[in-house]
Amino acid sequence: MSKRGVFVVVEGIDGAGTTTQVERYAAYLRERAREVHVTREPSTGPIGAFIREILGGRAVLPSSPEGDLMALLFAADRLDHVRGEVEPALARGAVVLSDRYDLSSLAYQSVATTSRLPAHEIVAWIRSLNRFARRPDVTLVVDVSPEVAATRRAQRGAAEDLYEKGALQARLAKAYAHAEVLVPDDRVVHVRGDGDIETVASLIQSALAPWIEE
Image 1 (cartoon, rainbow, N blue to C red):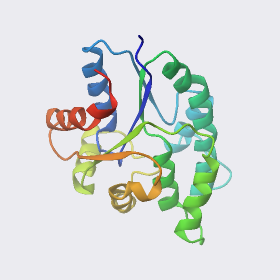
Image 2: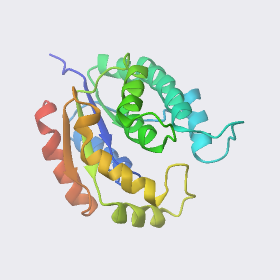
Image 3: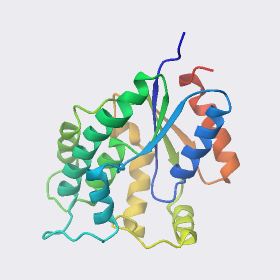
């Protein structure tokens, strides 16, 4: 009997190590003969590529890329991503590991927006944009201190993107620490991500074991 597909999302602030840990966990599962599909958001599709251009400052919009505009772009990319990539992989029985999903929109766009609307109304609106997006089987949040994340971002040597501002990242760390409030109907688990790569990888393996059929 083929194994069922499992949709796993890995989240955290910039510098949390989500990309590294997704690759580590994928290798761990492949060693155990599981089919794994690694993906990310923004996606590699056309809408996702445009978002990355905006984030990197390579595409300039006539208006400032506020949280509401970015939330709309991310929601469109997400539906395309799920229908064109995530669901076909799940149908094959793969473990789909997504580096970010709609929890990122709920955290980043609600924190970054300059709207005068109350925070709970912004969150409710972003949820409505994503109401047709498939829910993950489990979302794993890698919690790191803003200071550790800032050091890691500096070590990468890459140009700072739209959201990689110290004060914003500190606010995002607080939002992720209480991620269950943003996605109350989802299964969310947390691991501490301040340690070295191997230590965090081991924590992730243990945390996700209940959802992955060996």
